[in-house]
Image (cartoon, rainbow, N blue to C red; front, side):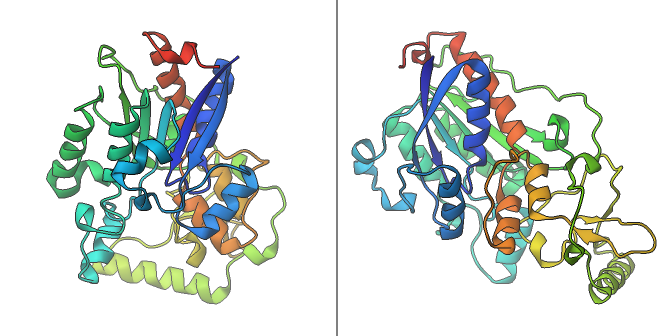
Length: 337
């Protein structure tokens, strides 16, 4: 069995890595993640619970361009879910209200794409997979995505990015994200993203059978949700909370703020009981994480980490297509041991 080496940038709790590993296992490859970066200490704790002893550099910005070759290990595949807040609708709105820069002008998070680019240009892995919010495609009238693609295409064949929805790949969550893949071998030029899976979904299939009453929201919070929804509807500002029924086909997108009030998805418990929040485990199920994935001991952090993660089944399908595509050409993947 051959071995494929990867690096996992802005790794969160490892969703991209899990998706890749699932794909490689199906294709008969071993996997070695030789390096990961993650600046959030709580994410690192969860990552290391599940992937102990992986080489870590907390802040990828600390690696200078002229040190990349010596510090970053050789690898076949670069994975990166680079920070989305500077490009997301909510993130841009918050930054505007605080009179802060967004997009590439955000010096803390918005320019981290260039660290990815430096590693790609110095280490030249055979392929890469990047993930971000769908708003990246339209941000600043599409100028940012055009710049990203222009820079990536100097050394890589990069097909047009694709927006894929988690609910089209076996997960009962509406979660649209943009994916960008690239291949060092430019003679390969007809990559195809995975097609949607035709499968009837029900939210109840992702719910736990017994849930503690602590997850049922209080009368005060429930009244607050109802009144806020009425005010918002009257003022034309949106419709507030989303009540989800177990037989619904999907939930709304679960975000990192879910822990605050659960407004994106409150699970109906019938007419005679207030709805409840999803449990942290249910949030990770809706992201496609395996049942043996070890969650943070903090519920707040677990909710944040689930909301910031990636839909694993989408990653798995893309990675299957990536590896099969590489194997269809002249690829070193056949020779690595």
